[in-house]
Length: 289
View 1 (cartoon, rainbow, N blue to C red):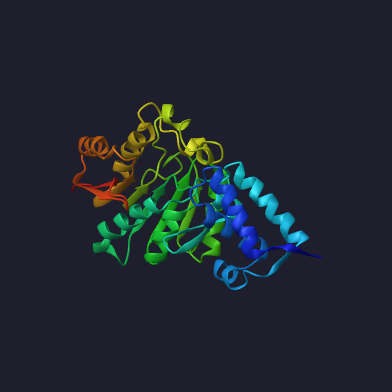
View 2 (view 1 turned 45 degrees about the vertical axis):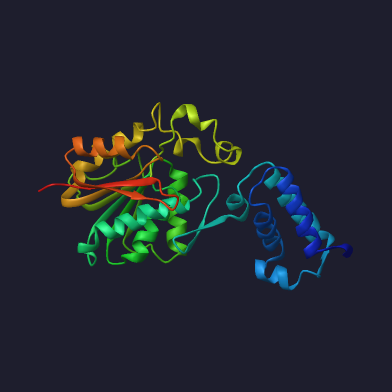
């Protein structure tokens, strides 16, 4: 049955206003993405067909998604996907939602390992959705990549992403605490990590959509935010080949402290890589001879 009063254009205007009144910054975008999901189309088609009337079933389905967004559930979880480094990753509450800033970790890894572009072994710790490991593997298909996460559920989803994106060959997933499941004799030319780095006292002050929906274990980095970062450095350095690279994503304002930790661990050639907002987001360094 067609409901005459509700066209695509009208319902989008209403949903956008509703979201805006609730303090959702990306109100129009969210409204469009959710309606496109219901209709099985894209945002461009919504504009072209703005006068098309919606059926009762379509309106009912859209209302349910609006209710979920009103509760602050992230759009990425509602859609079940998020684009990262030009790739569509499946995401749900098992993993953090990939952020654009984390693309800087991939860029730093590629840039600092460019002298070994044809062959190498990489280890990605705290892999979550697998976004860093998979994006790196797609760019360096001849490399062997290992990805670990303490959450077996996250590893399950990361493996699904690798299979779907055609990156599973030469990519190993392990459910373990950092590098604990690795053979002690294994060595790598590159180690990357996006560990939890938010100070515990600040987690509850995060946006509702983050603190209530994303896994706290992937956010909470201890009293100063660096508990897991310290462990990443301590456990990674013995795994590095000579002149290998360790690159870690950190919170804004942590780059200085992390650079010092890396220097104390014996790493040289330290670099700080800025994100799209100009914050020092990734710290990297090289092992010595």
